[in-house]
Image 1 (cartoon, rainbow, N blue to C red):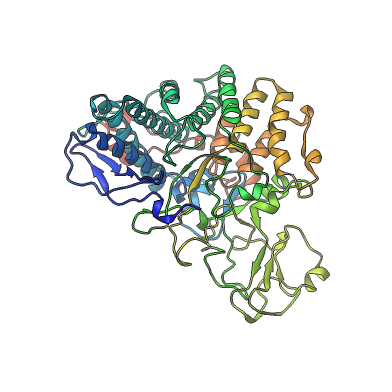
Image 2: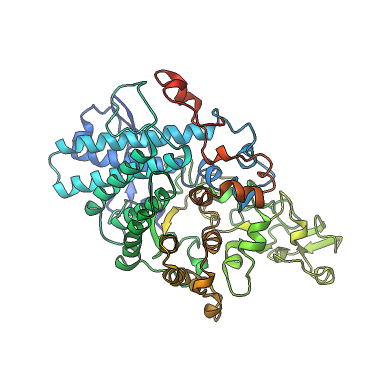
Length: 558
Protein backbone atom coordinates (compact mmCIF):
# COMPACT_ATOMS: atom_id res chain seq x y z
CA UNK A 1 0.00 0.00 0.00
CA UNK A 2 1.23 3.52 -0.71
CA UNK A 3 2.65 5.52 2.15
CA UNK A 4 -0.08 7.98 3.14
CA UNK A 5 2.37 10.86 3.26
CA UNK A 6 3.25 10.32 -0.39
CA UNK A 7 -0.23 10.21 -1.89
CA UNK A 8 -2.03 12.88 -3.85
CA UNK A 9 -2.79 15.87 -1.63
CA UNK A 10 -5.35 18.54 -2.40
CA UNK A 11 -4.47 21.77 -0.63
CA UNK A 12 -5.75 24.74 -2.57
CA UNK A 13 -7.15 25.99 -5.82
CA UNK A 14 -4.78 27.11 -8.53
CA UNK A 15 -6.26 30.23 -10.09
CA UNK A 16 -5.35 32.40 -13.01
CA UNK A 17 -6.88 35.78 -13.60
CA UNK A 18 -9.12 34.38 -16.31
CA UNK A 19 -10.16 30.87 -15.30
CA UNK A 20 -10.18 28.48 -12.37
CA UNK A 21 -7.66 25.91 -13.48
CA UNK A 22 -8.19 23.40 -10.71
CA UNK A 23 -6.16 22.06 -7.84
CA UNK A 24 -2.48 22.97 -7.82
CA UNK A 25 0.03 20.16 -7.56
CA UNK A 26 3.74 19.56 -7.78
CA UNK A 27 5.52 16.25 -8.20
CA UNK A 28 7.19 14.90 -5.07
CA UNK A 29 10.47 13.05 -5.06
CA UNK A 30 8.60 9.92 -4.00
CA UNK A 31 7.21 9.50 -7.48
CA UNK A 32 3.55 10.16 -6.58
CA UNK A 33 1.58 13.21 -7.66
CA UNK A 34 1.60 15.62 -4.73
CA UNK A 35 0.04 19.03 -4.46
CA UNK A 36 1.41 22.32 -3.16
CA UNK A 37 -0.34 25.46 -2.04
CA UNK A 38 -0.36 28.03 -4.82
CA UNK A 39 -1.95 31.42 -4.44
CA UNK A 40 -1.77 34.98 -5.79
CA UNK A 41 -0.36 33.92 -9.12
CA UNK A 42 -0.34 36.01 -12.26
CA UNK A 43 -1.83 35.30 -15.62
CA UNK A 44 1.56 34.25 -17.02
CA UNK A 45 2.15 31.59 -14.37
CA UNK A 46 1.22 28.77 -16.74
CA UNK A 47 4.02 29.87 -19.05
CA UNK A 48 6.63 29.03 -16.41
CA UNK A 49 8.08 25.54 -15.88
CA UNK A 50 6.39 25.17 -12.49
CA UNK A 51 3.17 26.64 -13.82
CA UNK A 52 3.13 24.14 -16.69
CA UNK A 53 3.53 21.27 -14.25
CA UNK A 54 0.94 22.63 -11.84
CA UNK A 55 -1.53 23.31 -14.63
CA UNK A 56 -1.42 19.73 -15.89
CA UNK A 57 -1.74 18.38 -12.38
CA UNK A 58 -4.68 20.70 -11.80
CA UNK A 59 -6.40 19.05 -14.75
CA UNK A 60 -5.78 15.61 -13.23
CA UNK A 61 -7.77 16.63 -10.16
CA UNK A 62 -10.96 16.84 -12.22
CA UNK A 63 -10.97 13.04 -12.62
CA UNK A 64 -12.07 13.00 -8.99
CA UNK A 65 -15.37 14.50 -10.05
CA UNK A 66 -16.25 11.28 -11.89
CA UNK A 67 -14.37 8.27 -10.50
CA UNK A 68 -15.30 7.04 -7.04
CA UNK A 69 -18.07 9.61 -6.53
CA UNK A 70 -21.79 9.13 -6.04
CA UNK A 71 -22.49 11.06 -9.23
CA UNK A 72 -20.12 8.91 -11.27
CA UNK A 73 -21.65 5.73 -9.87
CA UNK A 74 -25.22 6.93 -10.29
CA UNK A 75 -24.56 7.64 -13.96
CA UNK A 76 -22.99 4.22 -14.58
CA UNK A 77 -24.39 1.74 -12.02
CA UNK A 78 -27.99 2.89 -11.58
CA UNK A 79 -30.60 2.19 -14.25
CA UNK A 80 -28.89 -0.87 -15.71
CA UNK A 81 -29.54 -4.58 -15.87
CA UNK A 82 -27.01 -5.45 -13.14
CA UNK A 83 -27.96 -3.06 -10.31
CA UNK A 84 -31.14 -1.50 -9.03
CA UNK A 85 -31.79 0.73 -6.03
CA UNK A 86 -31.38 -0.23 -2.41
CA UNK A 87 -33.29 1.31 0.48
CA UNK A 88 -31.55 4.64 0.94
CA UNK A 89 -30.57 7.74 -0.97
CA UNK A 90 -32.27 10.62 -2.74
CA UNK A 91 -31.12 9.70 -6.28
CA UNK A 92 -33.29 6.63 -6.87
CA UNK A 93 -34.98 8.39 -9.77
CA UNK A 94 -31.77 7.86 -11.74
CA UNK A 95 -32.53 4.17 -11.48
CA UNK A 96 -36.28 4.40 -11.94
CA UNK A 97 -36.18 6.97 -14.79
CA UNK A 98 -39.04 9.03 -13.39
CA UNK A 99 -39.71 12.64 -14.36
CA UNK A 100 -37.55 13.79 -11.44
CA UNK A 101 -34.65 12.96 -13.72
CA UNK A 102 -34.70 16.27 -15.58
CA UNK A 103 -32.50 19.18 -16.64
CA UNK A 104 -32.20 20.40 -13.05
CA UNK A 105 -30.40 17.22 -12.04
CA UNK A 106 -27.57 18.23 -9.73
CA UNK A 107 -25.30 15.40 -10.79
CA UNK A 108 -25.62 16.34 -14.46
CA UNK A 109 -24.72 19.94 -13.66
CA UNK A 110 -21.72 18.95 -11.52
CA UNK A 111 -20.33 16.51 -14.06
CA UNK A 112 -20.82 19.00 -16.88
CA UNK A 113 -19.22 21.94 -15.07
CA UNK A 114 -16.28 20.02 -13.64
CA UNK A 115 -15.37 18.20 -16.84
CA UNK A 116 -15.46 21.47 -18.75
CA UNK A 117 -13.30 23.05 -16.06
CA UNK A 118 -10.78 20.30 -16.69
CA UNK A 119 -11.06 20.75 -20.44
CA UNK A 120 -10.40 24.47 -20.21
CA UNK A 121 -7.41 23.82 -17.98
CA UNK A 122 -6.06 21.44 -20.62
CA UNK A 123 -6.69 24.02 -23.35
CA UNK A 124 -4.71 26.60 -21.39
CA UNK A 125 -1.81 24.20 -20.84
CA UNK A 126 -1.67 23.16 -24.49
CA UNK A 127 -1.72 26.73 -25.78
CA UNK A 128 0.72 28.20 -23.28
CA UNK A 129 3.23 25.36 -23.23
CA UNK A 130 4.83 26.60 -26.45
CA UNK A 131 6.18 29.66 -24.62
CA UNK A 132 7.64 27.78 -21.65
CA UNK A 133 11.41 28.03 -21.31
CA UNK A 134 13.81 26.56 -18.79
CA UNK A 135 12.57 22.98 -19.16
CA UNK A 136 13.42 20.30 -21.71
CA UNK A 137 11.30 19.98 -24.81
CA UNK A 138 10.67 16.34 -23.93
CA UNK A 139 9.00 17.39 -20.66
CA UNK A 140 6.98 20.07 -22.45
CA UNK A 141 5.83 17.50 -25.00
CA UNK A 142 4.91 15.05 -22.26
CA UNK A 143 2.85 17.61 -20.35
CA UNK A 144 1.02 18.59 -23.54
CA UNK A 145 0.37 14.90 -24.21
CA UNK A 146 -1.04 14.44 -20.71
CA UNK A 147 -3.33 17.44 -21.22
CA UNK A 148 -4.56 15.95 -24.50
CA UNK A 149 -5.19 12.61 -22.78
CA UNK A 150 -7.26 14.32 -20.10
CA UNK A 151 -9.16 16.46 -22.60
CA UNK A 152 -9.92 13.40 -24.75
CA UNK A 153 -11.13 11.45 -21.73
CA UNK A 154 -13.43 14.23 -20.56
CA UNK A 155 -14.98 14.74 -23.99
CA UNK A 156 -15.43 10.97 -24.27
CA UNK A 157 -17.47 10.92 -21.06
CA UNK A 158 -19.47 13.97 -22.14
CA UNK A 159 -20.34 12.70 -25.61
CA UNK A 160 -21.44 9.32 -24.25
CA UNK A 161 -23.68 10.90 -21.63
CA UNK A 162 -25.06 13.91 -23.47
CA UNK A 163 -24.50 13.39 -27.20
CA UNK A 164 -23.53 16.56 -29.12
CA UNK A 165 -21.82 18.99 -26.76
CA UNK A 166 -19.86 22.21 -27.02
CA UNK A 167 -16.43 21.46 -28.51
CA UNK A 168 -13.90 23.94 -27.15
CA UNK A 169 -10.28 23.35 -28.16
CA UNK A 170 -8.85 26.72 -27.19
CA UNK A 171 -8.58 28.44 -23.84
CA UNK A 172 -11.56 30.47 -22.70
CA UNK A 173 -9.96 33.48 -21.05
CA UNK A 174 -13.07 35.56 -20.43
CA UNK A 175 -16.68 34.50 -19.86
CA UNK A 176 -18.61 33.87 -23.05
CA UNK A 177 -22.13 32.84 -24.00
CA UNK A 178 -21.18 31.77 -27.52
CA UNK A 179 -21.60 28.01 -27.41
CA UNK A 180 -23.12 25.42 -29.68
CA UNK A 181 -23.60 21.66 -29.86
CA UNK A 182 -21.01 20.18 -32.20
CA UNK A 183 -21.88 17.07 -34.21
CA UNK A 184 -20.86 13.78 -32.65
CA UNK A 185 -18.59 13.10 -35.61
CA UNK A 186 -16.52 16.22 -34.82
CA UNK A 187 -16.29 15.35 -31.14
CA UNK A 188 -15.05 11.83 -31.80
CA UNK A 189 -12.60 13.11 -34.41
CA UNK A 190 -11.18 15.51 -31.84
CA UNK A 191 -10.93 12.81 -29.17
CA UNK A 192 -9.13 10.46 -31.53
CA UNK A 193 -6.76 13.18 -32.75
CA UNK A 194 -5.88 14.15 -29.18
CA UNK A 195 -5.06 10.57 -28.24
CA UNK A 196 -3.13 9.85 -31.43
CA UNK A 197 -1.03 12.96 -30.86
CA UNK A 198 -0.56 12.18 -27.17
CA UNK A 199 0.57 8.55 -27.46
CA UNK A 200 4.10 9.13 -28.86
CA UNK A 201 4.99 11.63 -26.12
CA UNK A 202 3.62 9.81 -23.08
CA UNK A 203 5.83 7.58 -20.94
CA UNK A 204 6.18 4.13 -22.45
CA UNK A 205 6.87 2.39 -19.13
CA UNK A 206 4.28 0.16 -17.44
CA UNK A 207 4.02 2.77 -14.71
CA UNK A 208 4.81 6.45 -14.87
CA UNK A 209 7.88 7.53 -12.91
CA UNK A 210 5.39 9.84 -11.15
CA UNK A 211 2.67 7.32 -10.41
CA UNK A 212 -0.75 8.56 -11.41
CA UNK A 213 0.27 10.29 -14.62
CA UNK A 214 -1.16 9.02 -17.89
CA UNK A 215 1.07 6.64 -19.81
CA UNK A 216 1.23 5.49 -23.41
CA UNK A 217 -0.53 2.26 -22.44
CA UNK A 218 -3.38 4.16 -20.77
CA UNK A 219 -3.87 6.29 -23.88
CA UNK A 220 -3.84 3.24 -26.15
CA UNK A 221 -6.38 1.46 -23.96
CA UNK A 222 -8.60 4.55 -23.96
CA UNK A 223 -8.27 5.03 -27.72
CA UNK A 224 -9.21 1.40 -28.28
CA UNK A 225 -12.35 1.90 -26.25
CA UNK A 226 -13.10 5.15 -28.10
CA UNK A 227 -12.93 3.38 -31.47
CA UNK A 228 -15.17 0.55 -30.26
CA UNK A 229 -17.68 3.08 -28.96
CA UNK A 230 -17.62 5.29 -32.06
CA UNK A 231 -18.26 2.22 -34.19
CA UNK A 232 -21.75 1.99 -32.68
CA UNK A 233 -22.67 5.59 -33.56
CA UNK A 234 -23.64 7.24 -36.82
CA UNK A 235 -20.12 8.69 -36.90
CA UNK A 236 -18.45 5.29 -36.96
CA UNK A 237 -18.12 2.12 -39.00
CA UNK A 238 -16.79 -1.41 -38.69
CA UNK A 239 -13.38 0.00 -39.59
CA UNK A 240 -13.25 1.36 -36.05
CA UNK A 241 -13.12 -2.17 -34.66
CA UNK A 242 -10.12 -2.89 -36.88
CA UNK A 243 -8.47 0.30 -35.63
CA UNK A 244 -9.03 -0.69 -32.02
CA UNK A 245 -7.56 -4.18 -32.30
CA UNK A 246 -3.81 -3.38 -32.65
CA UNK A 247 -3.99 -0.75 -29.92
CA UNK A 248 -5.46 -3.19 -27.42
CA UNK A 249 -3.06 -5.95 -28.46
CA UNK A 250 -0.17 -3.59 -27.90
CA UNK A 251 -1.32 -2.84 -24.35
CA UNK A 252 -1.56 -6.58 -23.66
CA UNK A 253 1.72 -7.59 -25.26
CA UNK A 254 4.28 -4.84 -24.85
CA UNK A 255 4.21 -3.17 -21.44
CA UNK A 256 4.56 -5.99 -18.94
CA UNK A 257 1.03 -5.96 -17.54
CA UNK A 258 -0.24 -9.32 -16.34
CA UNK A 259 -3.51 -10.68 -15.01
CA UNK A 260 -3.08 -11.43 -11.33
CA UNK A 261 -3.33 -15.20 -10.73
CA UNK A 262 -6.11 -14.71 -8.18
CA UNK A 263 -9.09 -12.56 -9.18
CA UNK A 264 -9.62 -11.60 -5.53
CA UNK A 265 -6.23 -9.86 -5.41
CA UNK A 266 -7.14 -7.27 -8.06
CA UNK A 267 -9.21 -5.31 -5.55
CA UNK A 268 -7.50 -6.53 -2.39
CA UNK A 269 -7.09 -3.66 0.07
CA UNK A 270 -3.53 -2.35 -0.05
CA UNK A 271 -2.86 -3.90 -3.46
CA UNK A 272 -4.19 -1.04 -5.60
CA UNK A 273 -0.87 -0.60 -7.41
CA UNK A 274 -0.64 -4.09 -8.91
CA UNK A 275 0.53 -5.53 -12.22
CA UNK A 276 -2.97 -5.60 -13.72
CA UNK A 277 -3.60 -1.88 -13.22
CA UNK A 278 -2.99 0.23 -16.31
CA UNK A 279 -4.09 3.53 -14.82
CA UNK A 280 -5.87 4.76 -11.71
CA UNK A 281 -7.09 7.99 -10.14
CA UNK A 282 -5.18 8.87 -6.98
CA UNK A 283 -6.73 9.41 -3.56
CA UNK A 284 -5.28 9.71 -0.04
CA UNK A 285 -6.32 9.27 3.59
CA UNK A 286 -5.27 12.77 4.64
CA UNK A 287 -8.61 14.54 5.38
CA UNK A 288 -7.06 17.92 4.63
CA UNK A 289 -6.00 16.96 1.12
CA UNK A 290 -8.48 14.33 -0.10
CA UNK A 291 -11.39 16.59 -1.15
CA UNK A 292 -14.48 14.35 -1.12
CA UNK A 293 -12.42 11.19 -1.34
CA UNK A 294 -13.14 7.91 -3.07
CA UNK A 295 -16.65 7.16 -1.81
CA UNK A 296 -17.17 3.86 -3.66
CA UNK A 297 -16.97 1.92 -0.39
CA UNK A 298 -20.31 3.40 0.76
CA UNK A 299 -22.75 2.41 -1.92
CA UNK A 300 -22.80 -1.37 -2.41
CA UNK A 301 -23.29 -2.44 1.21
CA UNK A 302 -26.24 -4.13 2.89
CA UNK A 303 -27.57 -3.10 6.31
CA UNK A 304 -25.40 -5.40 8.40
CA UNK A 305 -24.73 -2.88 11.16
CA UNK A 306 -28.03 -3.18 13.05
CA UNK A 307 -28.21 -6.97 12.93
CA UNK A 308 -27.70 -9.14 16.04
CA UNK A 309 -24.06 -9.27 17.10
CA UNK A 310 -23.03 -6.48 14.74
CA UNK A 311 -22.29 -2.79 14.78
CA UNK A 312 -20.75 -0.56 12.14
CA UNK A 313 -16.98 -0.75 11.79
CA UNK A 314 -14.35 0.30 9.25
CA UNK A 315 -13.74 -3.25 8.01
CA UNK A 316 -17.33 -3.92 6.95
CA UNK A 317 -18.01 -0.33 5.93
CA UNK A 318 -20.62 2.35 6.37
CA UNK A 319 -23.69 0.96 4.59
CA UNK A 320 -25.47 3.59 2.54
CA UNK A 321 -27.46 0.85 0.79
CA UNK A 322 -27.58 2.58 -2.59
CA UNK A 323 -27.08 -0.28 -5.06
CA UNK A 324 -28.65 -3.72 -4.88
CA UNK A 325 -27.77 -6.44 -7.41
CA UNK A 326 -30.64 -7.50 -9.65
CA UNK A 327 -31.92 -11.06 -9.86
CA UNK A 328 -30.37 -11.15 -13.34
CA UNK A 329 -26.96 -10.42 -11.83
CA UNK A 330 -27.25 -13.04 -9.13
CA UNK A 331 -28.96 -15.79 -11.11
CA UNK A 332 -27.69 -15.35 -14.67
CA UNK A 333 -24.46 -13.36 -14.66
CA UNK A 334 -23.18 -15.35 -11.70
CA UNK A 335 -25.14 -18.49 -12.47
CA UNK A 336 -22.00 -20.66 -12.62
CA UNK A 337 -20.51 -20.84 -9.14
CA UNK A 338 -18.93 -24.26 -9.55
CA UNK A 339 -16.26 -23.35 -12.09
CA UNK A 340 -16.22 -19.54 -11.93
CA UNK A 341 -14.82 -17.98 -8.75
CA UNK A 342 -15.99 -14.43 -9.43
CA UNK A 343 -19.25 -14.58 -7.48
CA UNK A 344 -17.44 -16.04 -4.51
CA UNK A 345 -14.69 -13.41 -4.71
CA UNK A 346 -16.80 -10.37 -5.63
CA UNK A 347 -19.33 -10.57 -2.80
CA UNK A 348 -19.07 -10.76 0.97
CA UNK A 349 -20.46 -13.94 2.53
CA UNK A 350 -19.59 -13.91 6.23
CA UNK A 351 -19.92 -11.31 8.99
CA UNK A 352 -18.08 -11.83 12.29
CA UNK A 353 -19.45 -10.47 15.54
CA UNK A 354 -18.05 -7.20 16.81
CA UNK A 355 -20.83 -6.72 19.40
CA UNK A 356 -21.08 -9.86 21.55
CA UNK A 357 -24.27 -10.71 23.39
CA UNK A 358 -27.65 -12.43 23.16
CA UNK A 359 -30.22 -11.13 20.67
CA UNK A 360 -33.54 -11.88 19.04
CA UNK A 361 -33.30 -13.04 15.44
CA UNK A 362 -34.17 -10.37 12.86
CA UNK A 363 -34.54 -12.08 9.49
CA UNK A 364 -33.86 -15.79 9.94
CA UNK A 365 -37.15 -17.51 10.96
CA UNK A 366 -35.47 -20.80 11.82
CA UNK A 367 -34.28 -19.54 15.20
CA UNK A 368 -35.63 -17.08 17.77
CA UNK A 369 -32.55 -16.00 19.75
CA UNK A 370 -28.82 -16.03 19.12
CA UNK A 371 -25.77 -15.61 21.34
CA UNK A 372 -22.44 -14.45 19.98
CA UNK A 373 -18.95 -14.12 21.36
CA UNK A 374 -16.53 -11.71 19.71
CA UNK A 375 -15.42 -13.08 16.34
CA UNK A 376 -18.27 -15.58 15.98
CA UNK A 377 -20.06 -15.77 12.65
CA UNK A 378 -23.26 -13.74 12.94
CA UNK A 379 -24.49 -13.64 9.32
CA UNK A 380 -23.87 -16.05 6.48
CA UNK A 381 -24.94 -15.15 2.92
CA UNK A 382 -24.64 -18.44 0.99
CA UNK A 383 -26.14 -17.15 -2.27
CA UNK A 384 -28.60 -20.05 -2.55
CA UNK A 385 -31.71 -21.35 -0.79
CA UNK A 386 -30.24 -23.40 2.02
CA UNK A 387 -32.78 -25.98 3.31
CA UNK A 388 -34.61 -24.80 6.42
CA UNK A 389 -33.43 -27.70 8.56
CA UNK A 390 -29.83 -26.89 7.65
CA UNK A 391 -30.38 -23.21 8.42
CA UNK A 392 -31.88 -24.12 11.79
CA UNK A 393 -28.74 -26.05 12.70
CA UNK A 394 -26.53 -22.99 12.29
CA UNK A 395 -25.72 -20.83 15.35
CA UNK A 396 -26.03 -17.69 13.23
CA UNK A 397 -28.51 -16.05 10.87
CA UNK A 398 -28.56 -17.27 7.28
CA UNK A 399 -29.59 -14.74 4.62
CA UNK A 400 -30.94 -16.62 1.61
CA UNK A 401 -32.14 -15.11 -1.70
CA UNK A 402 -35.82 -15.41 -0.74
CA UNK A 403 -35.14 -12.98 2.11
CA UNK A 404 -33.26 -10.36 0.13
CA UNK A 405 -34.75 -6.87 0.46
CA UNK A 406 -33.70 -3.33 -0.36
CA UNK A 407 -31.79 -3.39 2.93
CA UNK A 408 -30.47 -6.94 2.94
CA UNK A 409 -28.65 -8.22 -0.16
CA UNK A 410 -25.20 -9.48 -1.21
CA UNK A 411 -22.54 -6.84 -0.58
CA UNK A 412 -19.97 -6.16 -3.31
CA UNK A 413 -16.55 -6.26 -1.67
CA UNK A 414 -14.40 -4.65 -4.39
CA UNK A 415 -14.48 -1.18 -2.88
CA UNK A 416 -14.38 -1.88 0.86
CA UNK A 417 -12.00 0.54 2.56
CA UNK A 418 -10.86 -0.49 6.06
CA UNK A 419 -8.13 2.14 5.92
CA UNK A 420 -10.48 4.95 6.87
CA UNK A 421 -9.75 6.61 10.20
CA UNK A 422 -13.16 5.88 11.72
CA UNK A 423 -16.41 4.09 10.96
CA UNK A 424 -18.34 7.25 10.05
CA UNK A 425 -15.85 8.69 7.56
CA UNK A 426 -17.35 8.83 4.06
CA UNK A 427 -14.17 10.02 2.31
CA UNK A 428 -12.20 6.92 1.40
CA UNK A 429 -8.55 6.98 0.40
CA UNK A 430 -8.12 4.04 -1.96
CA UNK A 431 -7.03 4.78 -5.52
CA UNK A 432 -9.82 4.25 -8.03
CA UNK A 433 -8.78 1.73 -10.68
CA UNK A 434 -9.95 3.11 -14.03
CA UNK A 435 -8.20 0.81 -16.49
CA UNK A 436 -7.02 -2.75 -15.90
CA UNK A 437 -5.76 -5.48 -18.17
CA UNK A 438 -8.80 -7.76 -17.92
CA UNK A 439 -10.89 -4.96 -19.44
CA UNK A 440 -8.32 -4.61 -22.24
CA UNK A 441 -8.78 -8.30 -23.05
CA UNK A 442 -12.56 -7.94 -23.03
CA UNK A 443 -12.44 -4.88 -25.29
CA UNK A 444 -10.13 -6.76 -27.65
CA UNK A 445 -12.52 -9.71 -27.74
CA UNK A 446 -15.33 -7.31 -28.59
CA UNK A 447 -13.33 -5.73 -31.43
CA UNK A 448 -12.52 -9.18 -32.80
CA UNK A 449 -16.08 -10.48 -32.49
CA UNK A 450 -17.49 -7.46 -34.30
CA UNK A 451 -15.09 -8.09 -37.17
CA UNK A 452 -16.23 -11.69 -37.45
CA UNK A 453 -13.03 -13.06 -35.90
CA UNK A 454 -15.03 -15.35 -33.65
CA UNK A 455 -12.38 -17.95 -32.87
CA UNK A 456 -9.86 -15.23 -32.01
CA UNK A 457 -12.42 -13.53 -29.77
CA UNK A 458 -13.00 -16.82 -27.96
CA UNK A 459 -9.27 -17.29 -27.43
CA UNK A 460 -8.97 -13.75 -26.07
CA UNK A 461 -11.88 -14.05 -23.67
CA UNK A 462 -10.63 -17.43 -22.46
CA UNK A 463 -7.55 -15.74 -21.03
CA UNK A 464 -9.83 -13.81 -18.66
CA UNK A 465 -12.00 -16.83 -17.94
CA UNK A 466 -9.09 -19.13 -17.08
CA UNK A 467 -7.88 -16.62 -14.51
CA UNK A 468 -11.41 -16.49 -13.04
CA UNK A 469 -11.61 -20.27 -12.62
CA UNK A 470 -11.47 -22.06 -9.33
CA UNK A 471 -8.21 -24.06 -9.15
CA UNK A 472 -8.49 -27.10 -11.37
CA UNK A 473 -11.51 -25.75 -13.26
CA UNK A 474 -9.63 -23.84 -15.97
CA UNK A 475 -10.62 -26.22 -18.78
CA UNK A 476 -14.28 -26.09 -17.77
CA UNK A 477 -14.19 -22.29 -17.97
CA UNK A 478 -13.00 -22.17 -21.58
CA UNK A 479 -15.55 -21.54 -24.31
CA UNK A 480 -15.47 -22.50 -27.99
CA UNK A 481 -16.29 -20.43 -31.05
CA UNK A 482 -19.93 -21.50 -31.08
CA UNK A 483 -20.34 -20.11 -27.55
CA UNK A 484 -18.60 -16.83 -28.37
CA UNK A 485 -21.75 -14.81 -29.00
CA UNK A 486 -22.61 -11.16 -28.43
CA UNK A 487 -24.84 -12.17 -25.53
CA UNK A 488 -21.99 -14.05 -23.94
CA UNK A 489 -19.74 -11.00 -24.30
CA UNK A 490 -22.26 -8.77 -22.56
CA UNK A 491 -22.49 -11.22 -19.67
CA UNK A 492 -18.74 -11.73 -19.40
CA UNK A 493 -18.14 -7.99 -19.08
CA UNK A 494 -20.69 -7.91 -16.27
CA UNK A 495 -19.06 -10.83 -14.46
CA UNK A 496 -15.60 -9.33 -14.62
CA UNK A 497 -16.36 -5.62 -14.22
CA UNK A 498 -19.35 -5.60 -11.85
CA UNK A 499 -19.47 -2.34 -9.90
CA UNK A 500 -16.65 -0.68 -11.87
CA UNK A 501 -18.47 2.28 -13.48
CA UNK A 502 -18.81 0.68 -16.91
CA UNK A 503 -22.23 -0.96 -17.24
CA UNK A 504 -24.50 1.91 -18.30
CA UNK A 505 -21.91 3.03 -20.85
CA UNK A 506 -21.61 -0.53 -22.16
CA UNK A 507 -25.37 -0.99 -22.55
CA UNK A 508 -25.69 2.38 -24.25
CA UNK A 509 -22.80 1.55 -26.62
CA UNK A 510 -24.41 -1.75 -27.57
CA UNK A 511 -27.81 -0.14 -28.16
CA UNK A 512 -29.54 -2.42 -25.65
CA UNK A 513 -29.95 -0.17 -22.62
CA UNK A 514 -33.73 0.19 -22.84
CA UNK A 515 -34.46 -3.45 -23.56
CA UNK A 516 -32.14 -4.69 -20.80
CA UNK A 517 -33.62 -2.38 -18.18
CA UNK A 518 -37.12 -3.43 -19.18
CA UNK A 519 -36.16 -7.08 -18.99
CA UNK A 520 -34.05 -7.15 -15.84
CA UNK A 521 -34.55 -4.04 -13.70
CA UNK A 522 -38.11 -4.08 -12.29
CA UNK A 523 -37.75 -0.65 -10.70
CA UNK A 524 -36.55 1.00 -13.91
CA UNK A 525 -38.64 -0.99 -16.38
CA UNK A 526 -41.97 0.90 -16.14
CA UNK A 527 -40.52 4.32 -16.97
CA UNK A 528 -37.47 3.97 -19.18
CA UNK A 529 -37.97 5.20 -22.74
CA UNK A 530 -35.82 5.42 -25.84
CA UNK A 531 -34.72 8.99 -25.10
CA UNK A 532 -33.08 7.90 -21.86
CA UNK A 533 -30.01 6.75 -23.80
CA UNK A 534 -28.93 10.39 -23.40
CA UNK A 535 -28.83 12.38 -20.18
CA UNK A 536 -30.42 15.83 -19.81
CA UNK A 537 -28.33 18.87 -20.66
CA UNK A 538 -28.06 20.92 -17.44
CA UNK A 539 -30.57 23.74 -17.50
CA UNK A 540 -28.01 26.27 -16.30
CA UNK A 541 -25.92 25.53 -19.41
CA UNK A 542 -28.90 26.19 -21.69
CA UNK A 543 -29.82 29.34 -19.78
CA UNK A 544 -26.33 30.83 -20.05
CA UNK A 545 -26.02 30.15 -23.78
CA UNK A 546 -26.50 33.03 -26.21
CA UNK A 547 -29.95 32.40 -27.65
CA UNK A 548 -30.89 29.89 -24.95
CA UNK A 549 -32.58 26.70 -26.08
CA UNK A 550 -32.73 27.82 -29.70
CA UNK A 551 -28.93 27.77 -29.98
CA UNK A 552 -28.21 25.12 -27.38
CA UNK A 553 -31.24 22.78 -27.45
CA UNK A 554 -32.11 20.26 -24.77
CA UNK A 555 -31.92 16.55 -25.54
CA UNK A 556 -35.30 15.14 -26.65
CA UNK A 557 -37.65 14.01 -23.90
CA UNK A 558 -36.38 16.26 -21.11
